[in-house]
Length: 300
Image (cartoon, rainbow, N blue to C red; front, side, top):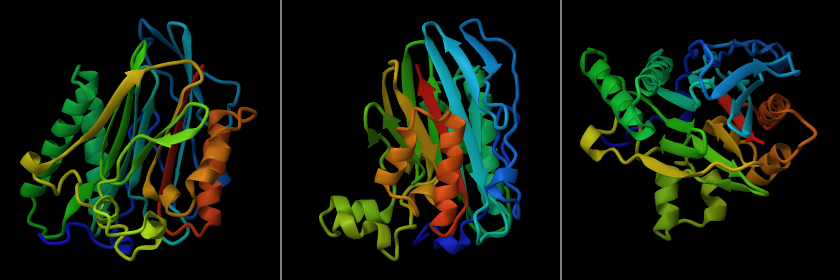
């Protein structure tokens, strides 16, 4: 199919997420008006979900044995798009957090990201592992596109985090990213992009990657990459106090460098939701060329 993904100006505005904390974005809203919904869910035997004192936005606390989980989340359409093709899901009771960045034509991007989001939630809820849920979500999206007569592509990235009582697992496809915070910010996902492939092959200076004209061309995406050719990135490890995670679409990392992101994530004087809001503002201040979605999860 040649270049699988259209340039960034054709990446569709992602779709609204589902009820736990499914990210929403209203095109013309100022950041302070972006709704952060607060939802309470049935109590999991090992996770107590309750709202934090920061009630202006949806920050949630979950109790996982000795570890407290706080998270903040948000999405914004940006300053140059009319639709938001990003979507997200954040649910401490399920221990599932994800960001998906849709792409295609017309409304295909928002449909693709929403379909994958809902499939992930369904499969994880039914007991599937994170990696199996990504595979299953990709297969559902491919089946959906095969049944369509539209020739335009319909795909999405995925960056997902699953927390259990004492461990974490992450999985990703595309260029939506997952970072870990543990005294410093470290990217644990690996971009599935043409630019990253060129860097790894020694054909491109990493310092020039962020300005490369083909930086938005992906080499992997759900809904476009065939199941047998899909390479899902994954990592897992022990969950520890003072550990944190950041999930985001490329609308953040295109405009805000890692050092600036790290300074915000490191601010312990701010709630997770306040850090998310600051990062969204930083992305808009840098131009707001794309939809931007951020989730921060903190363990303490």
